[in-house]
Length: 374
Ligand SMILES: Cc1cc2nc3c(=O)[nH]c(=O)nc-3n(C[C@H](O)[C@H](O)[C@H](O)COP(=O)(O)OP(=O)(O)OC[C@H]3O[C@@H](n4cnc5c(N)ncnc54)[C@H](O)[C@@H]3O)c2cc1C
Image (cartoon, rainbow, N blue to C red; front, side):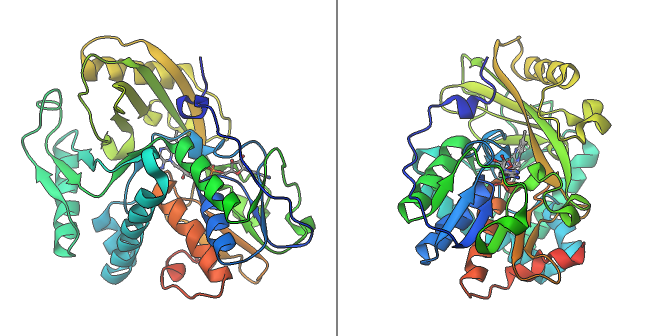
């Protein structure tokens, strides 16, 4: 049984150059963040090398649910309360622009299908109503659905459709991004674990390890905690019931069907919530059983599971990422801690760091300043 269904797709050969030392920038981690940063830096004319402990996209970027959603981990109305209207708006618009760029770069790895955020009960419905009102008030596209099609009707109590979102084959997408970066001149070194950031032969370092950072940067380990997510993929179902990303219970349940009609379903972390705050990249029988039982509830029979896997993401205390230089240092920059919402935000933040290193100032950088937590 393949580990990640996405990673089981054969990776095209990566034609990466070899650069002499020292380089301008060393990036640690070849997930979506590191590869996005590499692409912008290489296109900007810098000499850079990406160090990846395993292979491109082998971390959360090739193990996630494949949801490409705008915004951050908190709901929009909460972000407004936490950040203020202007900064929340800035963050959401930043990710909408990133989605548009992803659509251009990703080819068939991205499907612009929108997404459905569903209310599992009356409490969640009133929270979605508040988010919907806030989005509309601030001029963002969103649709409210009371009438839901089968098999959602009766199980869910309203939904927001986010029309600009989409679905990814995430490993294909990030491998493609790495290929674009390599074509632009980046060196991507797989199977190269970095043990000591200080020893890297580079003027600047970008740490893009999200939940896999361990204690590579001890300050970060204190504020970016590992969280495990688990996913299953079933045999193709008779019908395509869920043609766009669906999620509910604040992201504890998420599922969709790519065009091959397989059901991709993840979450149920709350089955053993405390045990899932771990960096151990292994499935657990309890969460797997809960995912299978939810699949059965959704489709009315027990589909054969063809792949199951786990991945790790990094969570910050306020659920916004940390992006920028480590306080008091100009050499080491970080882009991490997307709190389970990094497919679009990671792409956007990798690019944001690169633009800052190329000398461009962007208002979004202040939103994610690591100094707020470190
Ligand atoms: C099960 C699961 C489901 C998810 N679902 C979604 C979703 O549907 N939508 C969404 O937006 N987000 C989702 N996420 C979160 C999202 O996948 C991540 O936030 C995003 O992929 C982070 O990308 P990244 O490049 O920052 O980190 P990663 O993709 O984790 O990449 C970090 C890389 O760093 C490498 N590395 C670590 N330490 C070192 C070292 N010392 N030296 C060299 N390399 C090192 C790792 O091998 C890894 O490849 C999910 C995550 C998981 C685990």
